[in-house]
Image (tube, rainbow, N blue to C red; front, side, top):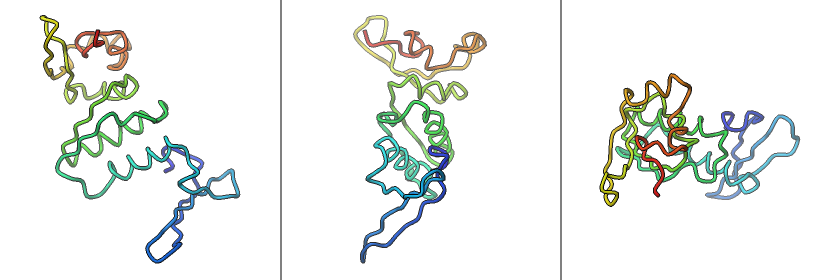
Length: 160
C-alpha cells in the first residue's frame, strides 16, 4: 500500500459481521479513515494487482491482459516491478499497448515478445526482442516504450 500511497499509515481489518470484514485505510495527513469503496478505481486496481502479483502462492501460469488500464502512469514502474517479481516464481504473460508500461521492461528486453506485421502486410508473427537490436537506441536514452510510441517496427510499431 505504501508503494502506491506513501501517506498510508496503516490498514486495519474490522470485522463487521459473521463472515464480513471491512478494511480501514488510515493516512498520515487525515484523521478520518477511508474504506475500499471510497478509494479511486485506480487505487483499488493497484491493490488487486498487489494481491495477485505479490501473493506468496502463485499459480503455475499467470496471464494478464492490459494491467495498465485505469492505472495512473506514475504507478507503471511499481506495477512493472510487481510483474517482474512474480515472474521469478511463475510464468507470467502480459499483453499491453502501453508505452508507459513497456518503458519499464527496457532492462529485460529478452523477456519481451511482440506481434510484428510481416512484409506482406497481411500477416503478423511473434518475435522475441533482443538487446542487440536496441543497444544503440538505449545508449542514446531511448526506452522500449519510446520506440513503440514512435512506431519502431522492431517493437511492433503501430497497427496502421
